[in-house]
Image (cartoon, rainbow, N blue to C red; front, side, top):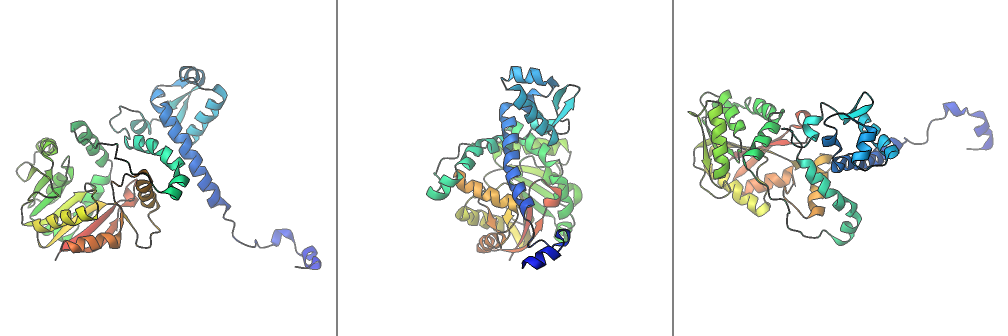
Length: 349
């Protein structure tokens, strides 16, 4: 562009030389900052402390915080919708309190894991250079009555209903006479399926101690004539035979070798042409989405946990094929759930 052209062209009419990507970059930076603000508020116990309204002076004094910095900190939490102002004080936002206040029935226990993982994220550069340090999983997943009841309450927030509504429209479900819910926990999925198909008999299969809890749920819904709970290890114990549908919701988390063994056990219990329907997390074959699942997969790598063993759709279909199950489709459930869950449907060949 010569000087004469520069003088002649109006700046207001100039076309930008390229599309500004600053918004995306600022959002990435803000995501880190917001995460730090939230996790530090969680770690400080702000949400539990503000279950009842407190003034800034009270909070700063009792938690030994700097008043001026804390005021700005709390104001950001208000802007995020996590706190609300109450007169001259602050309060955990009523719609968020059931999930953020420890001890509440719907308290988001998983936030403890996210908080513990933040140090690992801070070490990401070192891990990328040297690789993850293999550590024993520190979390023992207990499935006592309190935990199973908590899982049931979480499922009732929409995941249970949407899943049942989706599966009840399958032609195979309408024609089904026997269904097994693997790792069924509280049994609400199996109970719901039985409610939708009056000709369906359902088995809830889980560890013996969990099966006892499932039986209590079955009794509560008065559907014991068609739904029963059986205790065992679904990865290796005999599951029976003659099932039209095997269902599993985010229960199995083994590696590839364990998965083949488990899926073979599933295939053995199904009739030829029977369906295996698994609610789980997968990654698209092009490895571009879902972002949340991809981040989770990275986190499992850097923490050395590897509990979920996320796979692409094709990788999962390949493992299923080894067990005699042909993957048919993957249904996206993310529009009705806070996480990008999917429903993987496979058929026994």
